[in-house]
Image (cartoon, rainbow, N blue to C red; front, side, top):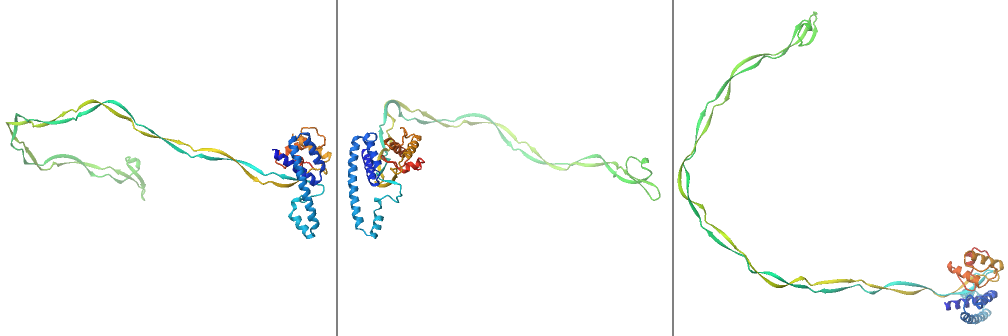
Length: 380
């Protein structure tokens, strides 16, 4: 912070010498002496830096004067093109410029760096045993085969003497007499003389002939007659007649129960003994250890230190009315707290610098850049 303040004051002093704005430099010196912007130590260092810059500037002026006297018209053009940084670019009458040293710009970058890679911790869990009473097999179960003899007895049994047989016999046909009513004459129609009212209700139609006679078409019903006839009930056939078998009773000795075998099971024999038994086998326990990271902060240089010409307010446009307008605009924005008096001072410069920094505009400790004036909407 101290180095930046000293460098800024030195640049302002050199700018005041280069542009001839002696009133601005004097006011800046008085503001610093008052102790409102910088301390006495900083002011002393700044004054030393100003003296060094003035000496360097005077040496450059002498070198420039010598070069100007020795150059021809053609070399003057090439020099202006090659060393244009010694003069403001495209200066206009009535405008003041300050050559400011723009410090290098840095950015602080934080990033995560791997401190320790992820790993795994392996722990062996030993097996666990316990002593228990256990029943063990002394003699295995077995079996033996026993023979059960046959059992005999006397039984009475019917024996076949003559087997059953069959014989064929003829069965004559069977007839019966039946009476049946059959149609003698089927139903039909006939034409009869006379009107329909004289006929029966079976008149189908009525017509008149050429002679004038009335003819009716009458339905004549069918006539039946009764006839007697002999019909076959069952035809003649042959039948098979079963002749039953002939038996006789005899007594004989037979096996009532055949000889058999049976399996006799011999149970196993056990005894109680004390044994050590595995309760939990040995196992492997793996614990994942996550990777560890640490935040590393580094400063990256984003822009080099450079010299830059800036258009500033000076005695040409730093009239009372313009300063009043500047103070009023800064007060409206909440940056100027003192009374509006039209006199440029440390409080006015500090308010302009605070506004410029807040708006990301070019800022100076002992001068007011025109970018600040334009941002406030002032026409000077």
